[in-house]
Length: 107
Image (cartoon, rainbow, N blue to C red; front, side, top):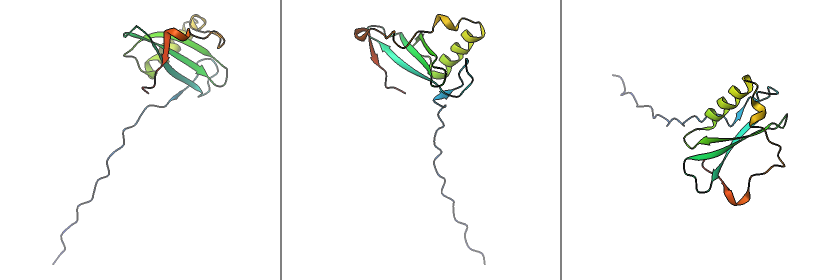
């Protein structure tokens, strides 16, 4: 006589999240991070800030609220291929107006 077979308990699968770091279009290293900043009084748009830790690329874009980090990265790469990356570049000393923005902690 054979024993009854035991059921294997299945471990729940953890959802995979996209990486926080992207490849910089200027220097090619995997140090480009993208953060979002809310605009007060505007529920349809937010500001995306891309920073490279290696070549110190600093780029700000106004994007719709529905876009995610990957979508913003694709926009930056498209600007880079069209040689229009200087349109969104700003120096880090040129900060946003304090009363017009607030930090976004959603992602």
